[in-house]
Length: 204
Image 1 (cartoon, helix red, strand yellow):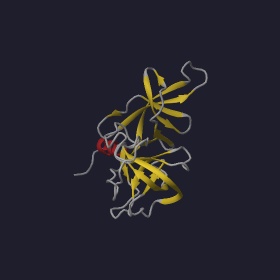
Image 2 (tube, one colour; image 1 turned 30 degrees about the vertical axis):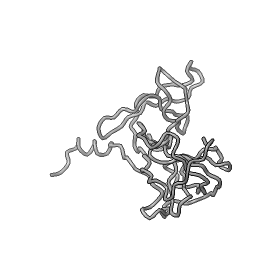
Image 3 (cartoon, one colour; image 1 turned 45 degrees about the horizontal axis):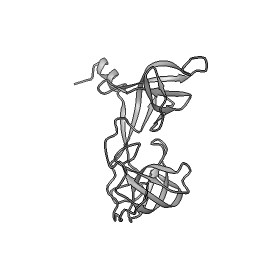
Image 4 (cartoon, helix red, strand yellow; image 1 turned 60 degrees about the vertical axis):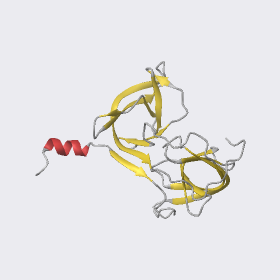
């Protein structure tokens, strides 16, 4: 049965939900990803702040101190971490210790990243306490845009309340209204490391 014009329009505006996993079933880096940096002395825990079902690692040589999310490789004691879901560049971490502490694997209520419109990309902001109109900052975006408050799920199409930074408002932001989420990126579930090591005292 051919699609009606309304059905074609709904399909064209449906949010494309993509699951990102840089590691294949054999525990190797997929060909579409590239390791651009190696760091050592990593300490990794289950419970990514970004995706919930991957790991987060700390390493002295990591630029921001924390690498998140991360997935285990084979052989054991190595992981790869990806900063942004739309950039397929990885940091390989040589793990000193994997611990069972931290938050543990859990569900995260929002996707790791969004694309709104043709160019605006947004990364889940896990540390901000900023609020506008009573809504918390959820995503920090490119092009001076941010997303505040929860996403609106309209079935196959998601919406985000987008604000633009604005120097002449009290909050520093101006509402641009609800915009369609073109792409939503999520992180794949991470399996346990191949050889877990005992949890040393005093870590994290």
